[in-house]
Image 1 (spheres, rainbow, N blue to C red):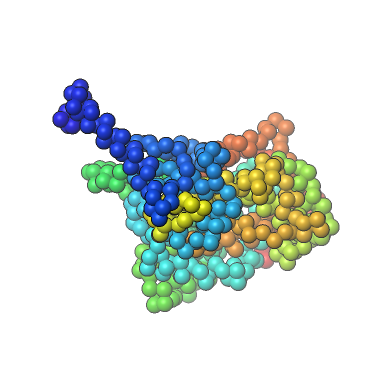
Image 2: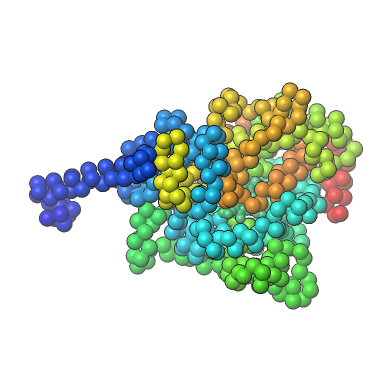
Amino acid sequence: MILEALTGSTDHYAVGIITVVAVLAVLYTRFSFAGRKGALLPPGPPARWFWSNALPAVNIAYALTNLVREYGPVVSFRQGSQVIIAIGSVEAAVDIMEKEGGSLVDRPRAIAASEILSNGLSLSMARYGERFRRLRKAVHPHLQPKAAEEYQDMQRENAMKFILDMLNDPTAHQKHAQRYAASVILRVAYGKSTPTANTDPEVVRIYKVAKHFQATIRPGAYLVDRVPLLRYLPGYGKQLYEWHREEVELFRHQLRRVKSEMDQNKAGLSFTKALLENTEEHKLSTDEMSYLAGSLFRAGSDTTAVGITATVMAAACHPLAQAKVHEELDMVIGLDRAPTFDDSSSLPQLHAFLLETLRWRPIVRIGVPHCATKDILWRGYCIPKGATVYGCHWTLSRDPIVFPDPEIFNPQRWLDSEGRLKENNMKFITYGFGRRACPGLHLANRSLYITLALLLWSFRIVQRPDAPINTQAFSDAVVSHAAPFEIDVIPRVEVAKLRAMMMEGCMD
Ligand code: HEM
């Protein structure tokens, strides 16, 4: 009967059964976790059919922000059989994602982005367990603050090359930011010391696999994540398997290249070299090492490039805030020498500008999902074991309690009345939470600092009168590079002198 009904029969009995099943499914969906430890799921929108996507395909960050406005700082809803929790206030993020970080160290199962695309080898999507601990432990020594300091000279040289690129062609500023990010990460991951161009076949391939990852990680992008059995359907996910082949080939190739350079005593210092020299200690297989280095590139290239582009956009859109940074640079450094890392602690206005940019246009807008390894109780609600938890960076950075007038770009909110940077524990709105927080943050922060310091020391960045920037389009784009915008740069130092200083710095 049910079969008949499903195939279109008008049999009243079958229709009745289906209605009952549907009602039960909806009730199960809404209340299955209610009552666990006497606590209800956090409030949220009504359940939908298990196959339907609870989130829109684009502008997910806005959708989550609207849910938070409607239902409160912690929202729950369902995506297929999965309970999704969105955290939308700084207070709840600190309580749940930071203080309870140990219970959120896991990632949710991701069939498309992790199991098929990366054969479970990617650190960013690794489930909590023995492999995750080995991978994370191997990364740590190379990216902690002391190690990140070692890369500063290389980052400054690359930032100077970025300034030369901007002088030559400011219209391609997004490409220049990508080139900067690719050079730095290729050096850190693989020791590549020859100049990097966006057109290098290696860089093109690497950005291609990074793009595939971004496409698969978007919530709801693949039905197989809601209907796991699909994976076994003959022919399903052909493209994902093809992308996996491209990815694994590329990452293995990079590892082999470093190995062969080591055999010829030609390898520069790098993360991959260190892995290969310490295989006993790290206990990683060849593919785990290949993927770990590849994961650094995937996680650290586009994010850094988008961060640099966001600072360019913020400067062009907020001339008064930019002028305050110029004032500070002129007072602390003057125009006879270019900024260095040693100036960092004397430039609070510049750091405030950077922090405000990262708040105004968060780089990872909805955050990377965590998975609860046990029930977490918060104010009478239960975040159940197994739930997928998003600390939505976009929503958190618009929390009006912590950031009054959140849509206003106001770097001064980060400074005290004496003009010093206020203490803040807000790095999670950029770099994520607890034990899954970004291990590359020290490297990334240094990149963002030095590119911004050199950029604003060198130029005044302005909008073009004929092409006003649509900041909304930048935020709406699934990948921020997909929203190009134009700017003009007005050198603050005589061009020949600027060029000479930057060229000299690049060749150090
Ligand atoms: C401005 C640039 C960057 C931003 C905004 C950023 C942001 C993030 C965020 C939000 C996460 C997820 C945190 C969470 O799960 O709560 C993450 C994870 C990660 N990031 Fe970054 N990141 C940046 C640069 C980098 C760089 C330069 C590297 C490597 C050198 C890197 C390596 C990683 C890795 C390996 C993970 C996965 C960690 C794990 O799952 O345990 N990131 N990043």
